[in-house]
Image (cartoon, rainbow, N blue to C red; front, top):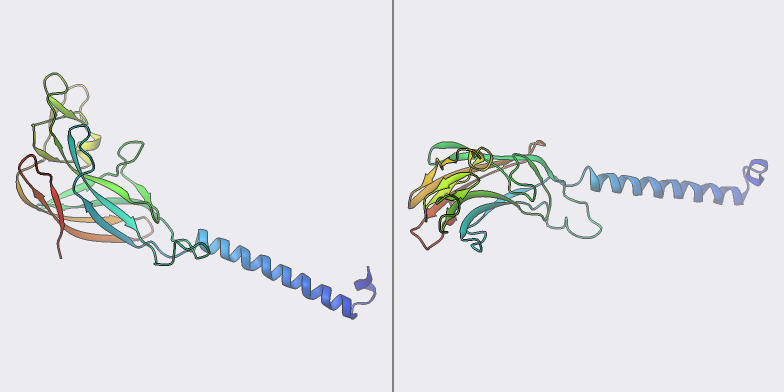
Length: 214
């Protein structure tokens, strides 16, 4: 090879510089890819309320939505991608009582889920059944018996432990008035947010209002 025979030649110097430049370019590209996929900006979590997720089936569902906002420029094409908050859980205190929530997903309620940038993740908070009796003369949601036009807390127990053989009356009723909720969402990576809300439960047919407390 010419560069082995004449290591000090001009051509060999240029060739060496080009090779070094290409190696440096590949290295930079690898670092950028790894940074975007693994070492991107830390998740920045926020919680917002949605008073009603739909009444098409005659059932009012109130949810909180968890957002991973990241940084303002994280959605631009060539910027680093905000990391997800992995395996996040939701828990808190409602009217002085400890409470654990689950996430609503297409696969049903789950205790843990990753919260990705730009993909709001819903947490069911309360439900009210406005239908006529739907099962053996009773109103049923997740195998709990509900009173007509009455809100119930949809915590982990409600959404995962209904008795399919012997349904029982739902346990945690929300009477009309103001109810105080402190809720925390925390990922396995240490990302965390705590917010305070007031659940304003009205008489039927008005729907529950979720108000942020300062």
